[in-house]
Length: 85
Image (cartoon, rainbow, N blue to C red; front, side):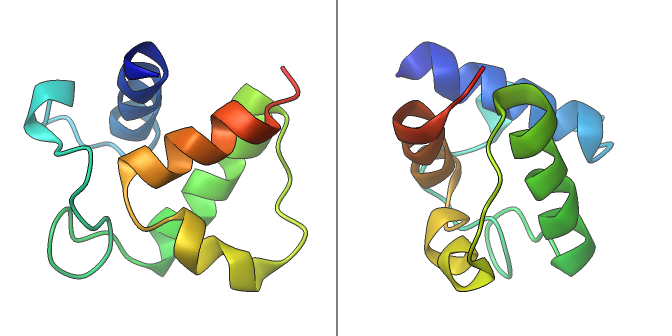
């Protein structure tokens, strides 16, 4: 699980252009939106693209995204349970 979390953090940094961060700076359980990492709705769309391109996951219900996108750990758990690639 820790390898998956690290891998996802690297994708997050690269795709969202968070060059001032490295994986160790991102708390696995910190909120991604609002306080915490401070991502916005455009970033959420980029995360959806990461899930599709890197892991073969398409979210069918956007209402599920709020719970899944809570933190890096919740996304990694979702990837672990649903990845196609």
